[in-house]
Length: 103
Image 1 (tube, one colour):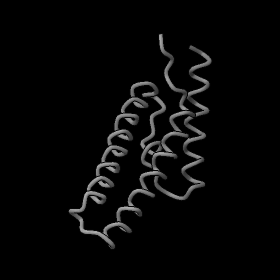
Image 2 (cartoon, rainbow, N blue to C red):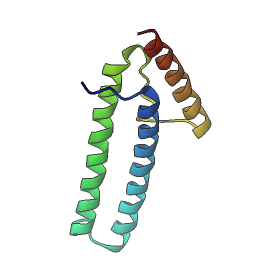
Image 3 (cartoon, rainbow, N blue to C red):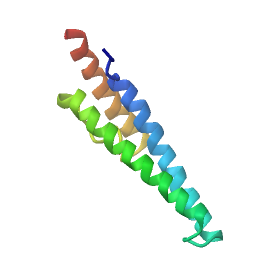
């Protein structure tokens, strides 16, 4: 039997995917200033962004299934300052860890 990810693992992954997506968006913008939007490079970069978006969506759904009572959309779709995001994630992770310890 496979073990589910911890809430903290979701938080770390969400932060990483969000940063990666932001870098991809910047990269696409940079590419599109130099190459046609129909070029293979720009199309592939958009495809990579779409794949990251789909992965974030799926992991967000998985987080909701695994930790419904502690679910926060800010894990995979952060908004606010980095400090606010970290605070929300740490609070959710602490609650989830307590629940896991009880179960």
